[in-house]
Image 1 (cartoon, rainbow over the protein chains, first blue to last red):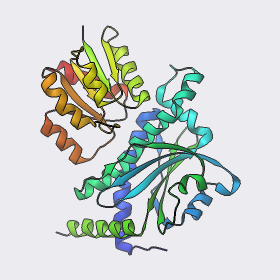
Image 2 (image 1 turned 30 degrees about the vertical axis):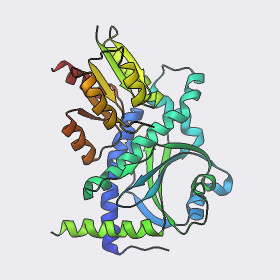
Image 3 (image 1 turned 30 degrees about the horizontal axis):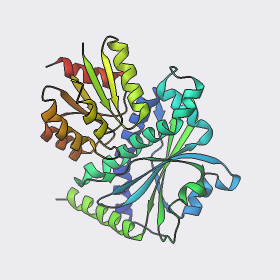
Image 4 (image 1 turned 120 degrees about the vertical axis):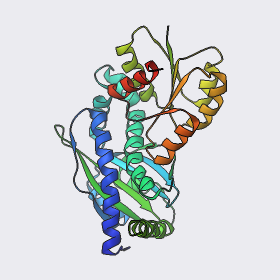
Length: 204
Length: 120
């Protein structure tokens, strides 16, 4: 499996820390409650490993928002929550003004917007740390098991998942979220180069 | 009568903007457009004091829309309301002479945008 040097790994954690901090603050403003987060744990894993962590083996279903980013490195980013918590998150976002029916109708759009905000917060930290812009696509909502979600890119795929266990913990609700980035081999090399450039910039 | 045009492909974002504006100013009119193209069409008969523009939308994006709106409605204040928090985006907004506000859309954020409108 792909490995970074200790220094590269530290740099990546540092950049993610900035992004995740911004994302947690954004999430807290969305749900109007305290959102705590763990220090991001970065692991390069296969899709199968990540899907297993997400409970794919037990058929656990996930609500996910996917967004493509292209630029210094290309990736497909995912924000994932347990499917059964999705309506609760949307209710926190829009308040009590909608009926359950209206809420259900808006669930996918609202989750897409939440994904858009959170994933852009994470990726914004990368762009701002390097001064190199990352172009994001429109967010797309998916529901299914971890296998379904992470297998969506399908095809012959030689990449890994940069699994970022963020653990968005919406304090009073026990809702935990995950963020993951799919990177193919070219993207991994670009990411490594990105980190090296970032480190070189620090020592100038 | 003040009119505000909210341009965002996300229905929930339009709903939240409308809700927070109406709470503060129930007498204001809030018009909606789901794309840059629809905004331009609405501007043939609307003269909003403020236009809230999302950046990342299907079809015409926020910057392209702002460039087309500016000569049509030079008196309108335009604020980019976006999840894209990259420095490059803020700089481009500044270069175009439009405001920049970060999503998520909250009561505080909308208050700030209204204060920006009222500061002129």
